[in-house]
Length: 214
Ligand code: B16
Ligand code: MG
Image 1 (cartoon, rainbow, N blue to C red):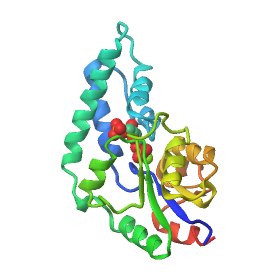
Image 2: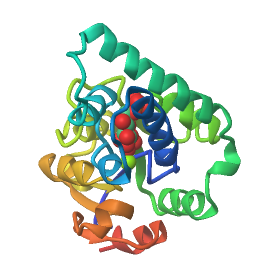
Image 3: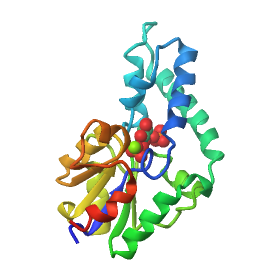
């Protein structure tokens, strides 16, 4: 086997909460009169909540915002986002994702999550993957968000497997950069694959079972 472990990004790879992020940020931005569209949204993939807010505020033209006001705006977005998450259930885990995870595990690979999201434990519970992964490294245990490699390096440490033997799976260009900065190879989906950011740029997550064989 070419790898000992696979570290999965969450939003945009295991489940499709990226649309919920977009809608919640859009509502916040509209309320402030800030232009926000899907092109700007693509820059938020894999980026932490507060760093995402700063990207959105690049288009803000009103009076200076205090740190308290910024925290309130991020809270407003997160409350809206969590309302969408509450509607999620195991039905939001696609057959191809679950079958691929199970197939990789049956091949003897260790499986981990490497996500910037502080909502990771809640999302995993909602989609029925609570306790499924061998390690969960998320926004609650890092100080620097992607493209910094911290979240993936922590996941590898939790697994006790050298970074070089871990494959990262990402949908964000910032996440692919984070994997590479951590000395890992990266298989991309979605936006990151369209941008050619991975060592492999996949159309379907099912391709992983061949990639890990080398
Ligand atoms: P939260 P990932 C990232 O998750 C999202 O892609 C990004 O849009 C979001 O801002 C970030 O998590 C923080 O999420 O507000 O829930 O802490 O793609 O790294 O799984
Ligand atoms: Mg993602």
